[in-house]
Image (cartoon, rainbow, N blue to C red):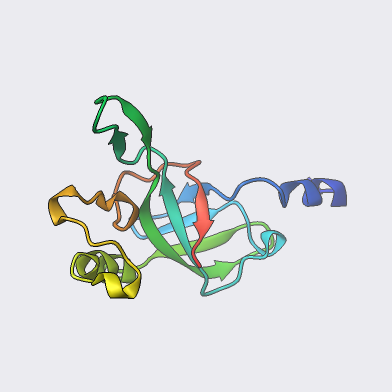
Length: 139
């Protein structure tokens, strides 16, 4: 089946998602050259069911923060798909989380009591990966 230029342009605007799971360390994304993906780029698999945030006064759940399931590096790019491989966990995410609680406010960061910090945005959730999970380029 031949894809028209119109169909190809339309796919550029679709979200980047997990199209296939090859192994415990590799996935295929539904975009490649057609979505300006390059070898070596780093993507996050988003966890849309992250930590619940509760209002401390009312006790009501006021929302959820999305997190990151895993971080992946692009290792092979095709016209309309790319292969991404799991990055080992000794990443900057773990380093940042470990050191955040000891940084001083002179660096422009909040000083928070460690037990009250919500770590969901700075750590990997390791939730199961599913076909259709959203991918986001990491900057």
